[in-house]
Amino acid sequence: MAPRSDLQELLKNLLGSEHVYFQPPETVKLNYPCIIYERNRVNTRHANDAPYLLKKRYQVIVIDRDPDSEIPDKVANLPLCSFDRFYTADNLNHDVYNLFF
Image 1 (cartoon, rainbow, N blue to C red):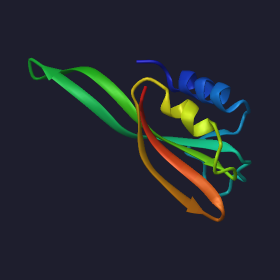
Image 2 (spheres, helix red, strand yellow; image 1 turned 90 degrees about the vertical axis):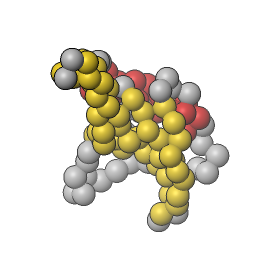
Image 3 (cartoon, rainbow, N blue to C red; image 1 turned 180 degrees about the vertical axis):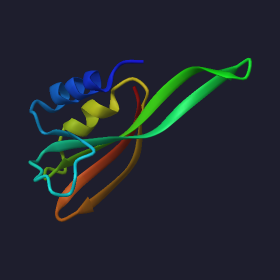
Image 4 (spheres, rainbow, N blue to C red; image 1 turned 90 degrees about the horizontal axis):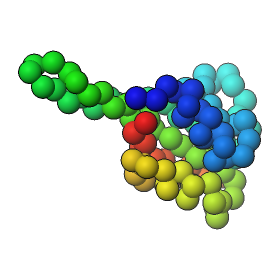
């Protein structure tokens, strides 16, 4: 299992900027386009009544003013990534993905 810092760097490279936020508090001023992510699940496999494989899942949200942004496609092409939903809020486009990392 790779450390979260590796995921942070991967997402920064995909975005092409430093505007990647892990569980940002509401007081943080976001700069767009950006990626917000948080851990939302751990899949556990068991053998002999003990966990032997833990896989963390993150919810990754790409937020951009541009409805035709290429950033969501870059995120969607990551291994073990699946699209969850799309919505708009405050004239910003939000693409939500689930990513095991």
